[in-house]
Amino acid sequence: MKFVMAVIKPSKLDQVRDALTALGIEGMTVSEVKGYGRQKGHTEIYRGAEYVVSFLPKVKIEVGLRDELVPRVIEAIRNAARTGSIGDGKIFVYDLEKAVRIRTGESDNDAI
Amino acid sequence: MTKFKAGALGALLLLAAPALAAESKIDTGDTAWMLVSTALVLLMTLPGLALFYAGMVRRKNILATTAQTLATCALMSVLWVVVGYSLAFTEGGAFLGDLSRFMLMGMGMTDTHALAKTVPEAIFMMFQMTFAIITPALILGAAADRMKFSAMLWFMGLWMLVVYAPVAHWVWGGGFLGSAGVLDFAGGIVVHINAGIAGLVTALVLGKRLGYGTENLAPHNLTLSVVGVSLLWVGWFGFNAGSAAAADARAGMAMTATHVAAATAALSWMFAEWLVNKKPSVLGIVSGAVAGLGTITPASGFVTPGAALIIGAVAGVVCFWASTSLKRKLGYDDSLDVFGVHGVGGVLGTLATGVFATVAVAGLNDKGEPNGSGLVDGNAAQIGTQAYGAVVVIVYCAALTYIILKVIDAVIGLRVEADEEREGLDLVLHGEQVH
Image 1 (cartoon, rainbow over the protein chains, first blue to last red):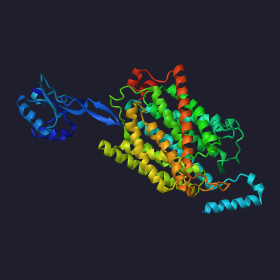
Image 2 (cartoon, rainbow over the protein chains, first blue to last red; image 1 turned 90 degrees about the vertical axis):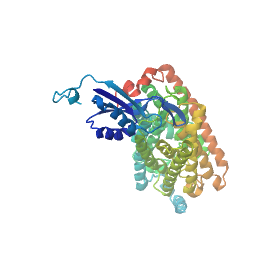
Image 3 (cartoon, each protein chain N blue to C red; image 1 turned 120 degrees about the horizontal axis):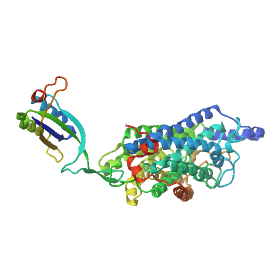
Image 4 (tube, one colour; image 1 turned 180 degrees about the vertical axis):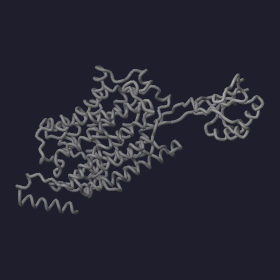
């Protein structure tokens, strides 16, 4: 089992969700987060004074999946979340040790 | 024209029956309008100004900003009744009134004031109270996010008694500026220059907010500011048209000029910002409206709607420049642009009154002299008189504001600690939070 964590542009969330659902992914966790990568924030002007916004709003998606789905999920997220401009985000993949569905007690591949 | 005829008729009646002159004559129409105006001007502060300012600060300082306006309103009300009104609006001398209305002593049910002869004095006193509330409250925008609550209260109280009351006496209460012919219909000098200059001095004495110029200090919720400015805009009809102290045609022209200038200034600020910063911001549009309202204040009741169009259009662009480029160049942190909007707008409007004041709108006084006339009526000297009034108040207000702030700083300190400022005044000063 793998655990995929992707940080994407907030405006791309719906497209990513649709792409993952099409692959048979049945659930995911989403949080509003802030951060920066190579984009390094940007400068804004308020009443003539410039200031740097270092942490930009992003959305973090977390989903657990079977090993064999990983390449397709990465591809799906890339296709759905990509705009081509800097700040599109990143995808991280972890090994997932265990998963349990609370209601039924099912575990691992049956639980995700 | 009807006003002139009525004046002439009145003069004839006075000649025929001099005994009548001593009697006060309460007019129910005027009285009703002044009651409404008083309520409208209070609405400008609560909740208008409170919301306008609360929307422009950061999330951690919303309640502190609101509390400042609220507490200032209450404190000014008490001080006005105790001694403020007496100092500003009794005969006294050229520089200050006397104590004949201390605690409103001797103010009877049938008394009237010379500036509002057809309205009970209690209503005139209340109307003027709402001005004495909003003027100090305006200053607080310059001190946002960093002033101690206790220091703020001391400052508000002292400033109203030492700066506001005398200046109101000079211009309106029979003092030397009014006698010199300085025109200020509803408070370009008394309210806006006064608050704007005090705001600038306060910003300079307090110093910049932590993170100014590097961190994001942008407004947390401009919806509040839009609601606040909407209330200010409507309330301003009471502020300016109420300053006619009568339900008459001059009040109607003052209201017209007020609305026209607010609208043109909102547009001209918006377009200027659109041109310079590529986006017409909500903050820009509301700031423009306030700039127009502040700038037309001294001129309303003296100028035509056409002049108001010009005054508003210029006000939006000039105040935009003052609140952005000028502020940046000079490097002070006037947090919510009290100086850029009210100070600069007040000076602009005071001078514009010298240009555009016309007897056609201002009418004639009891002696048959014009209530005001400017360059458009061939009286170019009025511009100099206006400049004199503005300069006197700028110098006095700046000096006294500086002294008051320095004294408070020496005794109890003006500014919160750096850690407290970082944490936010809501929690640190008031133990409360929103959102």
